[in-house]
Image 1: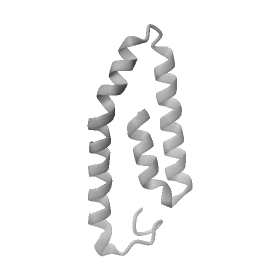
Image 2 (image 1 turned 120 degrees about the vertical axis):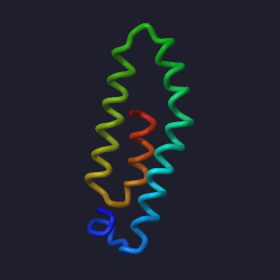
Image 3 (image 1 turned 180 degrees about the vertical axis):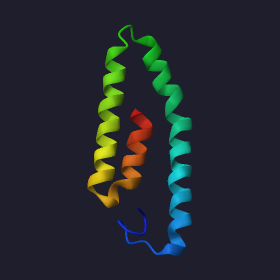
Length: 81
C-alpha cells in the first residue's frame, strides 16, 4: 500500500511502517486508560460501543478514501477503537 498508493520509494517503506506501528502503540498507551475510566463510569454500555463503532468506521473510511490520511486515520482508529 505504501509503495502503490502513496508512491513512496521502496527504501522508505520500512521507516514508514515502523512509524505507523510506533504511533499506534503510543496512542494506545495514552488513550486506553482514559477511555476505560469513562466507560466504566457510564451505566449505559451502548453509547460507548456505538461511539467506538462510528470512530472505527470513520477511520477506516479515511484510510480507504485518501492516501494522505493513513496517519490521521491510524490515530483516530486507536483513539476510538
